[in-house]
Image 1 (tube, rainbow, N blue to C red):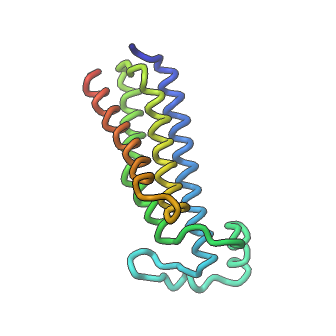
Image 2: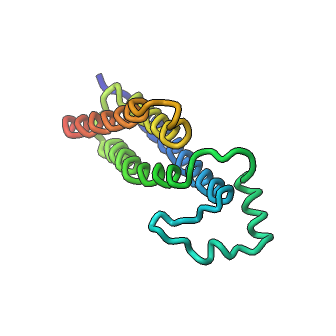
Length: 163
């Protein structure tokens, strides 16, 4: 059974908005952790000179903006690794859904739910990878990734079947 294009479009819009907030949150937490730990490594074994030469008023302002106080949550490596993983996965799902919606093809009835399942899987993966990695065993993080991956494959197959 087909779903209304409006339901699917709304799911895509909401899912994309949630993923945009997620990546913004990841960048925020990366900067917070950098200021709290002093770890300004770029991930390529380089610390940029200008990152270490912030003027005191600028540094204080940024520390305040990024709420760089209290306990350190996660590590710079974990936050930046999660950003890389998001950049390698999420844009493709969004593009796939947008292409489906713009094609004029009728999406299956489960398509809106698939968008929400994908987003939920990505949030679970992020939460476990960055925050509770030491308290939950690996199969939990893998489950979040697998839900999102399987959803993307199912959506791609649905597009090919509808075309």
